[in-house]
Length: 224
Image (cartoon, rainbow, N blue to C red; front, side, top):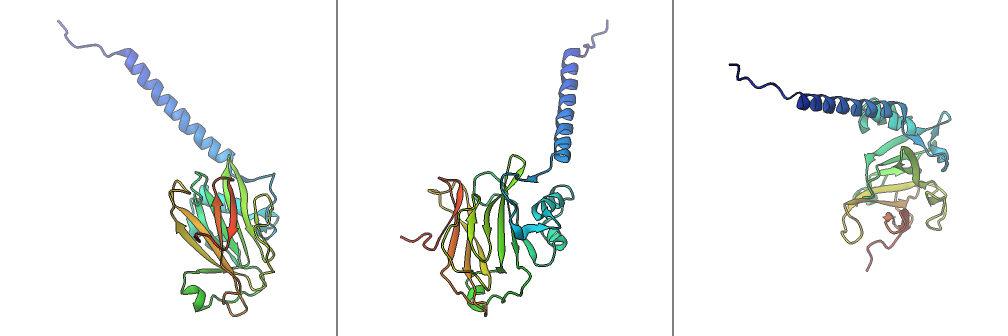
């Protein structure tokens, strides 16, 4: 008598169906990634200083990152002179939306950071800055800085200021406060420079306001 058990054909069929469904899932994901790239929001204008050859610079950055798997250093080697990517696909606001931060030094020469600024942590000089946030396959500029203004994604000026004729110095600072944020965030601290790269204004801290889901600016952040 043959005592060998017959294989359970139902289990085999279920296993095969699971494998097929997993394969279909990953195939769909690959198709979506290839045919539905991140694009600039049609509802919010591209900051003028971040348009290259008629196209939003951010779209090239995302393409190099997602399609060509380039890291931040490799992307910076691809960027036009005067541009630098500082944050690549990181959630700096603890709101589960990836961010990109790009600076531009513009066409005219900027003073180098003085030791007075570099010694307290400032790392970059810039004339223009933009922060993008990813929302439902679209890229939204949620913060823009130029020599005339600091604006949120709605185009609202955050502070009254005189023109920053010599650009700004920049410090990106990690910040944790369980009462304000679910996770660590990045504060954007800037100061106007004079023609010798020294501070020519109060420090301005740009932070994410969770109650309104918008960037705000203050010169008294953390003050009692």
